[in-house]
Image (cartoon, rainbow, N blue to C red; front, side, top):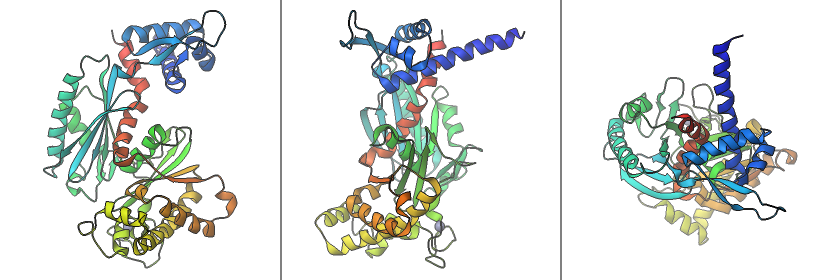
Length: 396
Ligand SMILES: [Zn+2]
């Protein structure tokens, strides 16, 4: 009855089928056409015509066979991981780290660039010229540079598309980061997230939580914040500032926080709090030194980490009650405090929460190391890989 709508629907169905097929390949790779058909519920003709298109575009490859079935064994299909590259960028106050991965997130290269100037336009200028160079270098790949995932200090307002608030880089507040980048590199998809969100999604893609549906990622440097991952999605809230739990009150009339409130969680459980407990500064005592002394059993440092873990536990009790996560992952510098921190967290949690609400919770330290956040940036790109492949495949 509505021919125009029907044509639209046909394209839409084709896109949905393609997305289904790509996501199935990504999840079960390498996988036969017959198994894709069985897993997606699509008929074999539809699956085969999609796969033929992807093969023709060089986005998937055919491998050998499983060798397990009788008769002629099926050919397996896999993603051609070198058909394009993903870029993740971790923006810090004095430098930014750029990570290049293949389409499956395997690290190909990483580089660190200085932030010679806190003006956000300095970053925009330098990163766009780096990305232009990368586009040229990788132009021989079928998909070229697939996209860029930027991890920023502070939060990004997803309704107004500007940097919402960055305590450490205040020059960036209200800066329209995406628009300025799009002006210079218009054909490159750009994804922007704060560090705790990127950490959460990076952990799900690359860490120990690949099959987990509900994860909370806790990260701390000077402040403290959490990222909540729920069944394939990040929990952003209305404008993208969900997870500012570092500013939830755990002490009425406690220490004054930079946010204006008193007794915020991050005043007691952040890396900054650890330095206060030790009555020193990162200049006097680099963090690596703290970790080394803790590992050697230094009693003053071990007791400070225990105290930090106690306060972590108090905040995490709120996290568990609010989100009922399967996994809590400690990221950033906190991750380096390892079992000493985790044991103290458990001691406090066991006193605060009935056992039944804790028995399925797993708490661990991320082992993605200093590239964890940049990996999160690459994950944002990989998360949209199906869309990119579909767009590319439908182009003439
Ligand atoms: Zn606060």
